[in-house]
Each structure stands twice: as C-alpha cells, then as structure tokens.
Image 1 (cartoon, rainbow, N blue to C red):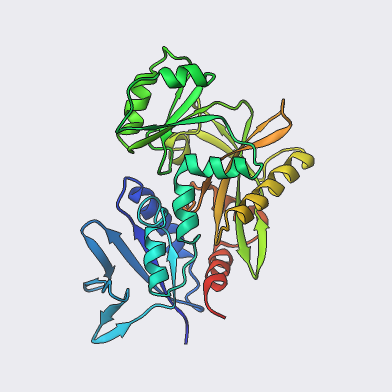
Image 2 (image 1 turned 90 degrees about the vertical axis):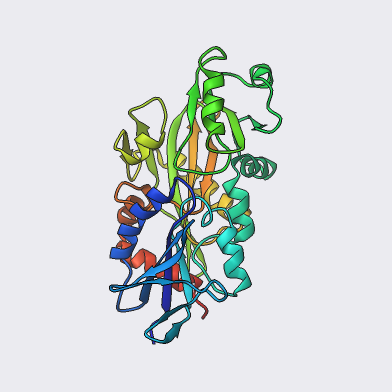
Length: 327
C-alpha cells in the first residue's frame, strides 16, 4: 500500500495567502504513483479536507478524516504552512504527541527559528556572524533612544516572529521615520527586531537532508529593485534572482559551508532556506535568518534552486517525504 500523506496548508496569519500559493506548486508535484495525497486546510474556522463532493472536518483527537464510513489515518505530514501554526512549532508539537512524522524541523527548532532575535543569539554564540540588533517589546516600549544610542544606521525594523518580510522597513537615519517603522512592525507582532544594516551582496540557499546526507542546493543571489528585499520584491517580481549565483567559488564554498553548519547547529530537518549578506570588507557571510518552511510558489527561491541542481520538484518532494517516513 502507498503511504497516506496529509499535506497541510492555510494557517492563522497573514502568511496564509503565501501558503495557498505554495500549495498550488506542491499539489502538482506529489508523485501519485508513490503516495496517496490528502490536502488539509487549517484555518481559524476549522481543519478540513475538501473532497470532490463534501468538506470533511478533521478529527483532532488523532488527526484523521472519515470518508464513506472509513476512518483514514495518515503515515506522514507534509507541512506547507508559512507562519503560525505550521512554522512556529505548534503543529509540530501536536504531531509529536500523536507520534506522527512530518517533513519540517521539530517543535523546538521551529519555535526557536521563528523568533529572529533568539535565532541570531544562538547563531552568534556558535560563532556564526550576525548583525548587531535590539529587541523591542510592545508591552514596555517607551522611546527610540535605546536604538539611536546603541545601533549604527541604517537599520532594518521588522516583526520578530513571522516571515515573508511582512511589516518590514529600512530606516536610514534616526530622524527618517523610525517611529513609524516601529509602529508598522508592532501591528504584525508584539516583538520588534531592529538590526544594523550589513552592506554586501544578498545570497540565499536551501539546505535539506536526504538518505541521511545534508545537501546544500545551488545558491541564489537576490538583487532587489527596491531598497531591500521586502514582500513586494519577494512575491511581486520587484527583484532579480540569479540561480545559480554568479559568484567566486571561494565565496560560494564559504556560504555553503556556513549553511550546512547552521543546519547542524539548529538540528534542522526537511528543507530550510538560510539568508546571508556577504560583506566583502569582512570577507565573511553574515546570517540574516532561517526559514524552516520556505516558499514553494512559482516565484519562490527553493524551486529555482532544485531545478538548478538538476532535480524535478517531484523528485524533491519525494525525497523529503521518504526521509521523514519510518523505515
């Protein structure tokens, strides 16, 4: 019998829109010869499997559905939810309780990497270069003085939890809309990260594990047509993405080596995408963040990198599922 795979999409945040876009790519590339595939839509209104004729609610006691009087239990879960609850560890903890394998990082790693400040703190402790930053809490934030006194401008202001560059701003000087940028970020999250701008070229690289081996995908260089790689640049074509990146082999090896090291340090599983700025003055890559459920839309970077490696997306998703399924 073929393994029964639940593919979860949707989510509880503004990133659900990106989850549904990713779902279109994933659905087309799950091998029907190898897996029985069920798409589960997780929303604030409920968890549902949409059959051709009916909408079937998921039984959360054991994450099952009942079709035509038959109870269907799943062998593994392919997680395609960006944002909460699929990228922040909540679903992972639930699946761990049910002893149900899944394709992403575990609960602890997902929760840690979803918090940008904690991620860079752990990375810095492990010897990974990161930008200097300050974390603001909405509950006790009073003024911008701490930022002005302790960080060099320009700075990036962004929600501490979340992805897709929603709520992110670049502020060039203390008088240049700093307060408005902080207010914008606080609309998305109770915590806001302010970090120094690192001058350099922006690179991003997918890393995954297959048959016990950690594989670094070809690197992408991101050249934003805007001032930085924001939501519009990511998802509405306002950037140039070069895959594989046209970069010296020595720099490429530095980035790949750091990416594999980060994957190991954070005990990652499945596919993650790690973003870097390569600072030529320091001669080193600086880690920006780790995305544990990277986008799979037509405009996303990981599918570009998989293609550049010479794999089809069907081969890629098959490898992710086979890695998480029990032997």
